[in-house]
Length: 366
Length: 132
Image (cartoon, rainbow over all chains, first blue to last red; front, side, top):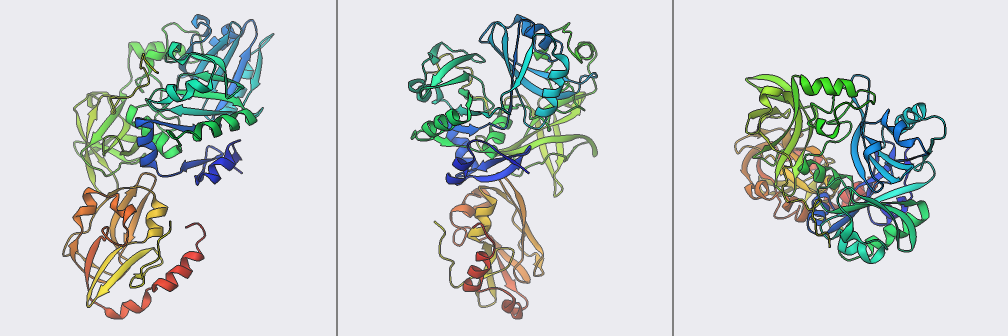
């Protein structure tokens, strides 16, 4: 049975087409994927991301204990910082990709993907001891909405009591939003300026209602979330990242400091010295025709790799994708074919992001 | 929001429509079909001269969230294709019964017309399909 988020009845009344996603009922679209995608690039949209795991890790020894589990170096984060990283297996396969946020000297928030969330929680629990406590905010009814788009700060500022102009990319703060206590971080998965807002169930409903009441904000579903992240070349857990892939071949080794003492880190260090024989690429086509995950990537008439994500890119009006290929074929400009099952579609390896005009890092959010 | 089903059209249970004029049928997909697909991003047109048997795949269609096949409502030979929808697949969403016709088929067996639903029957068929 699929779980309903606290915003479920909103999705239905807004005309959302609800599907099962990682055990949760979530809208794949409301008005339409293309319109929602373009709305995010030009103004702002709000996503229900309440399915994602939110864990609070607190106690005097929290940073040191987190350091043994995740790749982020929690001990060098100042309160208010967010860091992207991974939970790795012993051989550096990706169990999950996560964002660790430091709320205070002794309090951290870890946001994880919905699919592996239960396993992640058990893993954390296994490694926490003594005075460190672990709480599953998602299980306690907390949810999350992501307001994303170049207008996000201007629209959100009148509703909160923190100064969004002073809040940099990948920073987090406690705030009030519409009079309710919440946690706001300037992060996202679209490439646009945006904020993730975490709050308990009832408060989140009030915040979501206030946001969608704004003329410049539309609700957006999983379809647009996927095409937006793909245009940025962001990896998706279960596609680009899995236990059979490591962060170094995914091009994400830079997020892991050398000499970390967490599970899998020593393998990462040696992979950086001696890289493996495959690499994650982004590619573009000259066609609107889509490639699909699992399609073979072909070079010299032979299958050499596999597509992990493929979609029509609404901002570029062509189809784009990502996949793993041998390292010598991973250079931008390299021309390959993808067997879509109907034809062999020419693709060209390109640099990330495929959409170059994202506003997420702007210094002038207002 | 759901438009009236044009009375002169015939339909398959796969949601293709045919507008028959003499021995030429113009075909496309129904409002229900485009609505189910969502935003259409790509369509592969059949080749002029291609011979089709009723039920054969005519072409592939992709949307922002799905991929599907379109089937021949009737048997015959493709005499014309609508290249406009190749360049602007969104027409299939905005005008499925008009500007977004897919191809014209010179029919080889007029007796097949009896196997299709008229507008009223298709309306009843949709009513039994739930969400539309």
